[in-house]
Image (tube, rainbow, N blue to C red):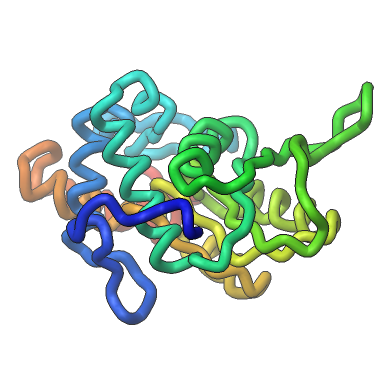
Length: 230
């Protein structure tokens, strides 16, 4: 990644064990709340496409319309990529929400970019991976959000079938479900996120965004999201 230099020492703050420092996670979570990309509603939970009831809804696409927060998230993402995935030769965004963030990161890192569809096109060239790449290249996958990790790992598998070496996956936010952590470990894919659910909840309670009485309720959801109920 010779084309990229860290913009400030602030962003180059990964701890030695290759995990994000809590202070960084808190700042990123604060930015996502500021952008209204994350909403918390333990009293009136959201319903996900899976049917799960959830006290949180995350839509990081909201950040794309807010230039200063977008720049912050992009810079943080590039710093983590530069520090922890320095051998990456290619950036791959996961369709659809990861495409914009992958393209932004690739532009700043001065690396080629591709994106991965959920499945091959049913017309034209029938591509699942869009863009030019060299087989054997080391690729960093960019996601906006990780829940169970299923869709992210499908993209990883598509890249691997195409002869690419996936060096890791980097997301903006993760719910920190155990099933996702287990899935990435089983696939032997290093996974990092700029911030996560535990950091978000600590921040939200500390700042009165949600009342302290809801803390245990919010933590219980992460432990068993498929059976969680009011």
